[in-house]
Length: 280
Image 1 (cartoon, rainbow, N blue to C red):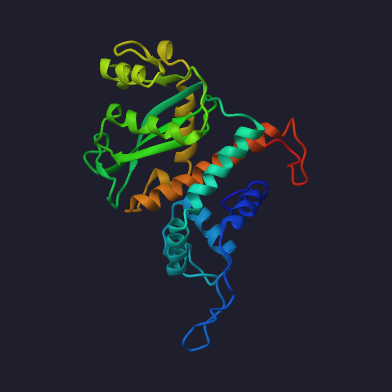
Image 2: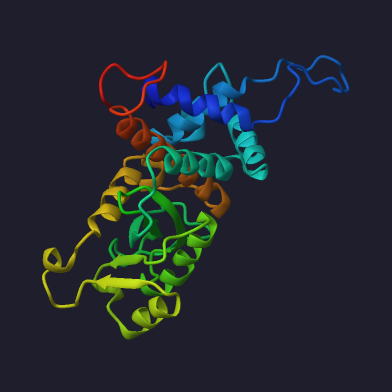
């Protein structure tokens, strides 16, 4: 079963392949001179998409085309080369040039997911009887395009993660003069307001004790993005233990979300050879 529809998987692979270094089909300096053919990068990429989408183990996804060890080693190699981070940056830049990021209003919120294997950024979850969990402080633009995230243990409060999350705005280049940050009642404090004022940002923060729909404003975009990310089972129930690997899977998921939104929103205004016959 394919992890993604063809109209989405093909443009993703076309761009991802450009970022990969050239490798010989056979290892020329193997000591025995009989090394097998190198597993195709396309196969590994599809396996990573299946891992991300279905959340299964490396051993379960391995078959006659490649082993679990090959998937892991190629994943580590691509992380070391910074391919996943660059992949996400290219998707964001393409979306910004074609549709336009809505950066005059952003939304930040935390989301707790399961992390049964523990790891570098896991902690006791207050909503899952103290089991290991992962919190991500995610930031999106005004439409819900993911701009970045900060990972922490599930026992961390949202408010202290706001500053490092807002630091990610520095990587987006020129920003509008007036930026409104939409936050929920968990950030309702004088410290948060002072932090926003210090950075020249306006805050729309839901008030504690009041019904959320009255004060929520545009915060629902980040909630929807959390739902999009949790549709990838490897993020909703994370067994990875190293932060670099978790960030790599998040970068891959954010790229898929961004490209999918780009194709959907550009479908009515642009024409290209592989354009889907129906609006996605």
